[in-house]
Length: 452
Ligand code: PLP
Image (tube, rainbow, N blue to C red; front, side, top):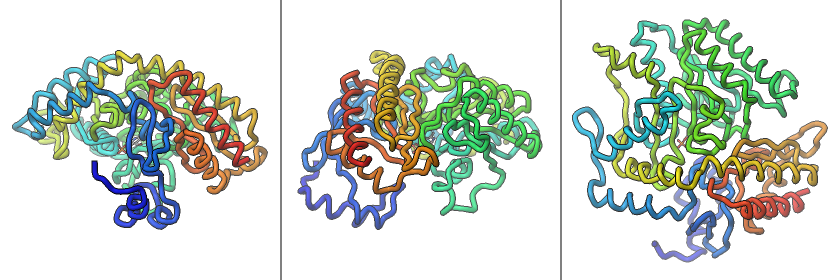
């Protein structure tokens, strides 16, 4: 480890580094927490202060920080073959083996092929491109548009940003890709229909999708992309009827359904995938994050048989994939993922996420009963959000200072939470215990008391 003292690190944090999703000036005025070590589900900062990680890295450290088999697999792969490419003409053992295992793992979701990437944004970009190419192969050259949900988050490449449904990730980078249109999310707390019943709201949003398809012309739409449970937009779990309705509409109009499961795959919602949880088979599925538990930047797009057939039975230039990354199918990433998959099974991650998620949501509800600051509580599995408001009647979002107090106090009390706009987002490792849930709730209680 590089030995620098605490003051050096704090003073130099933002001097030469720009942080993602942060204002450079703010990082100097309000330095972030400097995390130096982690064990199990506990982080240690540069001052030796320990916190339970209620963020799970960034929705990705599902197995916690002490996964020795993954570490061993990475080391062994670094010794054997640290890198070789999977571009036409070469491949590697771990890449082949991982594609074989994933086909088996995702078989219930109808996914038979993998295209490997270096992360979630790469996976979304890949899925959008493959969707367009699929239609071109079939002679549907006009099907180029993408539809998505407001509040949805699909990473930061130009394609992903264009289907993102949150102005914060779009405005400074416009103009984005033309031909991307958004429909209302099934967000019960705030929606343009003033509908508070989740099932009726799901029906209204599905109708909005169909209206948009009719308006654009169905034969111009390539794909609809959605997260089975919206994550970065503030944890929005749709009613169980929503995704099946979307599937049916996409089928009716020949539109591909892309499930962005960068957060939801590998157990976080309480199902092994979000699509499976809702009983839906997408055409393309974006995965990343927990596939390597944060040990290596890695991702994939899983491809259904229908889409695969279109490519594989086409022998002219339209079937050739003119897309890929130097680090597609990186052998070390493949080895890390291969080591993670059995660990996920062994730890019954999906089952534990469902059990602990129910407890965490109940604890969040109890905090809402005690603290007027909490306007809404939402969750599915170990994705939970508390939306803070300064006035429950008007639903006015809290200011930055108030939610900052919640964060700092919870941190001081030993709980790392994530703040995103007016939302506190909880996405702890899926291996947490019932006792950990109690610790997280107690830290939040302290934070809300201090800010209230
Ligand atoms: N898609 C979803 C649903 C995400 O939540 C994220 C990241 O949080 C991404 C895509 C982008 O992934 P990455 O940050 O690995 O590029």
